[in-house]
Image 1 (cartoon, rainbow, N blue to C red):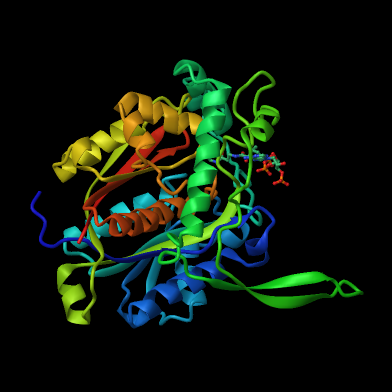
Image 2 (cartoon, protein in one colour):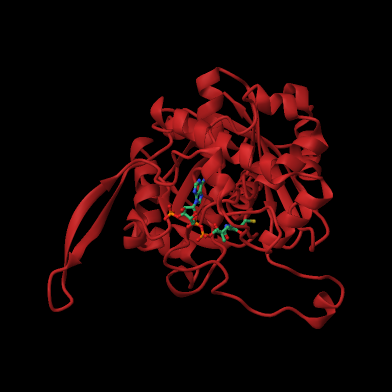
Length: 395
Ligand SMILES: CC(C)(COP(=O)(O)OP(=O)(O)OC[C@H]1O[C@@H](n2cnc3c(N)ncnc32)[C@H](O)[C@@H]1OP(=O)(O)O)[C@@H](O)C(=O)NCCC(=O)NCCS
């Protein structure tokens, strides 16, 4: 299909990611997101009134994350009521899906300036707390399990040992620590202000201290020996542990997407553009193995091959998912060379479900710039058997 305009990535940013019950557990997700989108428009000198829609990924849409949090982020940010907002749930792929929706709206000429992003405050609104039910017609067809069990099944099917999973995860922390120490995340992180309670001041009143939070909290100084001692998290004789799973965290991320005309009208300098997306549906029991197929589709839409791609971000939902991806795509050497997840991922930084697609996009664009490279792809497996991938080109 001919595209009337590019879907330009003007900028892509994120909050620092907070450990479970850490610094960000003291702020609501809409308020955290409001700081991120306000930071995003401020640093691009965009009047919020120009934003037509805020498309927000969020998986656990209950309590503070209910009531169409996308719209509430725009209102919490103090923006004009004319700025619309919607909330999207494609499970872990939610804010890659909002990238897809926003880019498609721009490509088709329906919208000109959109923010795609997401949030998940897993400390405050625990994963699964929106648990509903599924039809017997589904549960009779498929053995539906939790993601950790699927990660175990993948390890079994692809013959991945505990040592391989731990080695991958150890390296994820090492890469993330190096990226943090070298300041590689500084361009994408918008520092946020959080009122952190100092403890109980008596009579149930805690003193609040305004804290500026700017650095990811989950990255560990660890050793393979310590990791080897962790007990299996999901099955007694399994290989998936707290150390080789994505961390449960809090965070938000946002991407400013514009048509060519809008970018030039507002004098915006785009950093990249979207080239194509791919989604794939796979067996809902094994669930997390669809990344290679989603990438093939996104690459085909972009007219590119793996050899063209400089940087590859594959969400570290579990180490077994990334190792399965590397095995199926034949990209193990590219991983070893540092082209796949060069700055760590969900295992070391954490995986704030609804925010991770936009987080990956921010990290990918920064890394392409750091390398002076051209093409990147971000891919994510998705609960109940899907995957999504998006290809970007640095400008
Ligand atoms: C696997 C899981 C159940 C573990 O939960 P948990 O036991 O509460 O895990 P934690 O991360 O709090 O780690 C527990 C302890 O293990 C140890 N530990 C974890 N990772 C470690 C590492 N890399 N090295 C050494 N010790 C480690 C620590 O002692 C840690 O306690 P601390 O944080 O106080 O230091 C949880 O992280 C999980 O469900 N992850 C997957 C989330 C998910 O499914 N997302 C969707 C993906 S599709």
